[in-house]
Length: 59
Image 1 (cartoon, rainbow, N blue to C red):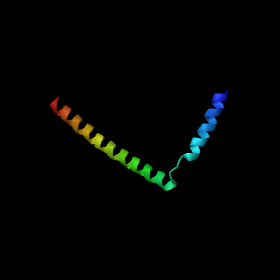
Image 2 (image 1 turned 180 degrees about the vertical axis):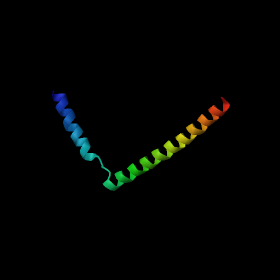
Image 3 (image 1 turned 90 degrees about the vertical axis):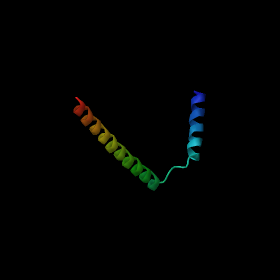
Image 4 (image 1 turned 30 degrees about the vertical axis):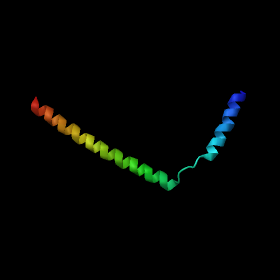
């Protein structure tokens, strides 16, 4: 039990040292991730469509 309490105390001390990002930074990063995901999804969708058409043409 002593080890657990020590772990909790040390964890709280370490969390106080963390520099948390600002709200604006989080929103900006989230936008980048969403836009990147949409772009990759569209690209992969187009590749899939082209390959499907090629396979259907061959068969």
